[in-house]
Image (cartoon, rainbow, N blue to C red):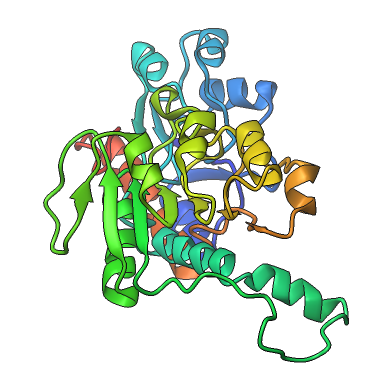
Length: 316
């Protein structure tokens, strides 16, 4: 059985893959191009793709009776894979939920604190040699403790963020999701996204990327936010209408933003780069060795189960 891994992985994951399968590990970190995508489906029994490897319906059609039977996605988000089109040609799809939850929630907290306390702006001041010493009115930001946070999407990651906000910072938790959630901390469900946005100091996007969540945070939601509120996005870049966000920031309709993902990643608009009230991270959500290793093992568990004729541990 031939396995293609589309990016270099942590050593432990690569060692397991090469020992267990006839495995080819691509050495480049760029997403697969069209020819590589088709070749992956035609030349391998299983593929471990990740963010940016766009397995669209057109690619499945072009592959014509693909040899590949499982796409074991490295990551919880799989909006780069047309799952319905994959199933139509007999390809199963899996992902890696659970392994990413706490690490992504930690990055959300990093962005909340960095944005509200103007930490990015302060670091740039020091690095540029422009800091002239402490004074009582320097870089006054928002004290996060006791504030209200709004979670858009109360799944595993959303709940992990809310838990940290409530227990760690005494924040009041509001949320918006398709259904009410039972959690171990106080949390109030908003009737609409606009209602949620209008009543919180920090709005955090924590929904999966999908056609249904494309531009979920749009101009109307941003307009509903308080002028002193912050937006944080750790979901998928296109969940936020980037043009509308830039406009809201330029017009000072919101206080700032913390972003780990971007609509046209890895492209980041110069307008965002130039703004002092925006924190920009390079998609660090799961960027820890033990987390990425756990993700790799979870993806390989799905490959192994498929080859053994067992049910996938994490089907999508």
